[in-house]
Image (cartoon, rainbow, N blue to C red; front, side, top):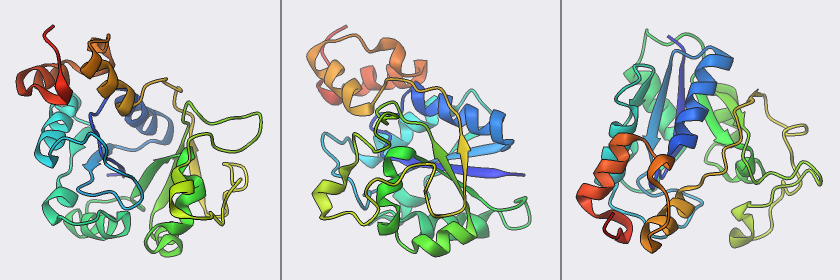
Length: 218
């Protein structure tokens, strides 16, 4: 079984995440994509974040209808700052004897410039298959990333790195660029905007039931 992991805060998980996972399976031949909600992400501020239990529940609701997808709670159960390196080691042990090849690690091209800051970045690139996904706000014109968070963490040694010159072994998935973000969905929910079909049916009803993100009456 070929396994890939897709990590994130999933605050909330939306159809763009599901389309990406589908692309990983269809284009690159992975049998299963594990959605791994972070407990505390290492390089991202968790603004407007709901409790980890709610984010995990939404992931489970979103993936329940597709047998290729699964919610993996290991980072939430582990607590603390979530590092992909630790997650890969854990999953290698959990699926020992059932994994074909290396675990795939999926992340957006907007994070390429930050990759050197990842825990055990070089070792991770050797132990796992890095899979670079298309992101809507990537600028093909100037070859740099419009929404990289690196300015918050000091000078970035990999500024200007693109898919074409990313210095680590990697694969590329040409997923459709869907103009959706979790932050935009949260904003729409809180201000009474239109967001119904930006998330799966299960996630929509979970947000309604739990009154998340300052939701107004629909």
